[in-house]
Length: 515
Image (cartoon, rainbow, N blue to C red; front, top):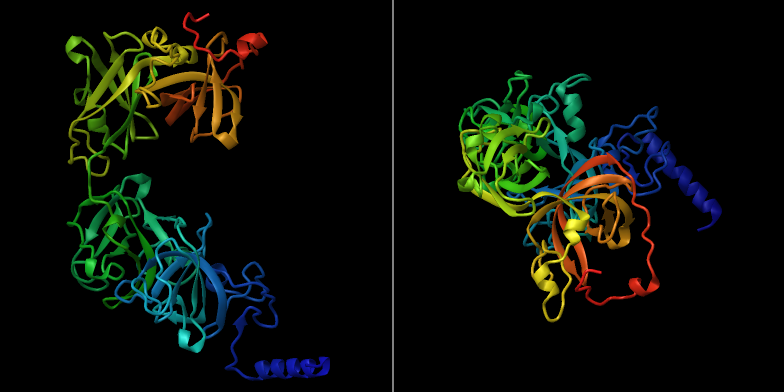
């Protein structure tokens, strides 16, 4: 096509768009007053555009065509498998969710195209329409619009935090209302834990305006705050035949999550948290003991998988040391302020430092369900705070063996992990590629260093730490790994380099006499 023909064609096209009210845009490139050189984002689809708001450009209007809208699948409507909820990755929660309705792309099985799963990253083409208050990308593959392409799989779906006030179920239009805070979370995976993390109370289950029988219910904050703000939980729309039924009235739930939608629900236009399945609202349960380790010579720290009820968590009668019959005792129990999933126990021990001890607990209730008591659970650990030199000290029996073996007394057999220990050391050097952090006793000396493997917490050179870990021998090197807790004790001093001869440093034989 000649330059003149192309120019005349462009002029004619612009004139047609300008003079025809029914003309629609395709994104990209978008309208003439915008430049959208790449594929449209979910943010641009959801965020209203104005000529004076360049921070949110390229917002398509109803019936506009969009190409290449990308996101991670967060859920499906199983009664109508062509509905796909997808979200953009990242931590910014605003305007990051959308819904695609392609009419012939099913979740599983799919005779028309790829089988999609939650966590798949996809690219969607379609045209924009409003469906029940939600922005929807729709279309048919038979018309060349509505195509969904798989990019990759196995992605994490971001969860957006919300409250009973920000996603209040009755949408009132206008700035400063619940609509203004809920609309940016449309189609996102949201989670509500209740004010202060204390959970939610089931405030209404009765069918009527806004609620269907059995699978709809309203929740408010358990602590009574924002009493006029409630959220609607929908256990039917997405699970389909596997509907989630409403809990008993006034029962307490730990948290709830689901995809935030909007539409007419039994006669009321409202927001609703649409559960994917029963895992989106865990049933009340007692805490599970997941860790136990010393944080001082006379103090143990217990960690549970959920926040504990203070009354049962601080009842010393609920805890027993393994050597209790010999005279050891739990003298005081205190829920850690600011993190009620942890309990510190002050103990009196008849066993010696570095002996193997155990702690048992029972009758512990969760903060959101204190009436459900935990069964007896136990964990073992080594008493005391170990220095790096104590971790490195060899098992005497292994030194006199044939062959001689220089291994820590706290490691397991072969390369197996030993019992839980707490070791104190100063961070000396980190090798991120190999996931090795070297720690040492501040005083230095022989056998005063140990390597920590794959520590899942940040560490700073020159700071001293307590690490709750296990010990193993790995290709001749004593390591602490499975680090489940770290306490920063603050700035210390890195020990001075040891001065040694090449002959000693190159000697890899077993040091049976510890010379």
